[in-house]
Length: 189
Ligand SMILES: [Zn+2]
Picture 1 (cartoon, rainbow, N blue to C red):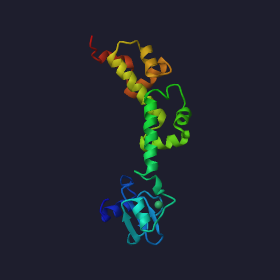
Picture 2: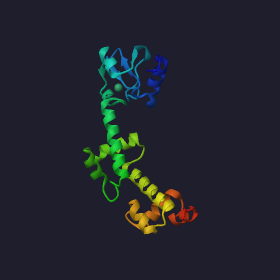
Picture 3: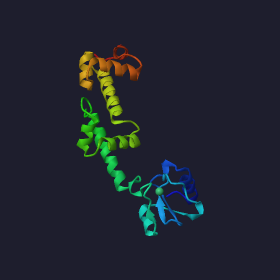
Picture 4: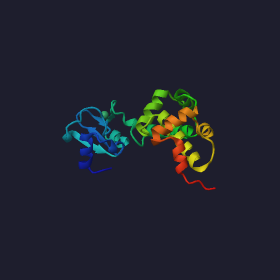
């Protein structure tokens, strides 16, 4: 756990980087919180810092219902959602969203699509569809560099619904059409 002065700075700034690294117990309310708690921070003189939720509870504090210490980083719930996101990333990489809906992917993972969207927003910084699009473009780029396959074949193998879609997305991401990138790439004979 960081030193008390560092915890205090993180607490009043609601510094996300410290989430899960300490909990603060408020003497006046007997409630303990994560550094990211949305409730207005209590006065520093009433606050004591603990390295874990268990330590705060052992000291007699109850978990806050707003910042939910049970979902803090490194908690079992947090580990579980990381596992879910990892599984989702693997499935998307393997084409789970090429021609299928986010709802279907979420159902395979046993959660709702809105929950999946929130997990991605928080842990990946992009939506499942954005991730799928990047994987598709990357697949296509590898095929462009490493093969002499015709464009329609590359579009299909990379998971694009059509050649037109492939061209449009590729131009958007790379700022030039796929054909121009291929001409530049040295291909081993
Ligand atoms: Zn709280």
